[in-house]
Amino acid sequence: CLIICYIDKFGFIEMPRVIEKAFIWAYRLRLSKKAVHLASIDNHVLSENLFMALGDAVTPIDFFSINLTKLEEIRFKGVEEIKTLVKEMKYYDGD
Image 1: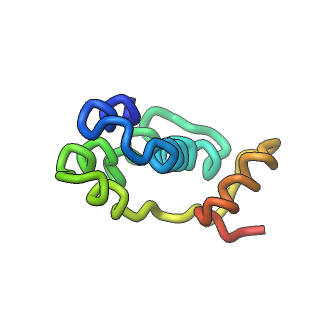
Image 2: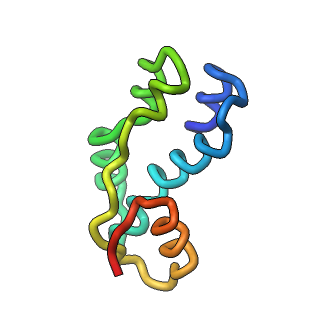
């Protein structure tokens, strides 16, 4: 949904970066928790609401200037390929 909102506002400018940012923002919660509950999702969105940030952005640069919090620990098991990808994108410094 975030990607669709971005396209609606700015078109297809910088799509690889949009996809990366949206992926990290959305999937970070799954990686950091053993179980994800509705309250966790609500708190995640309220603490770093990229929909509101996108709504406030005047240019794509405004949207990309929002720094996402890095993962401190990846607790979800069996996601080694995603863990490697998140490290390569510099959103996780762990093991």
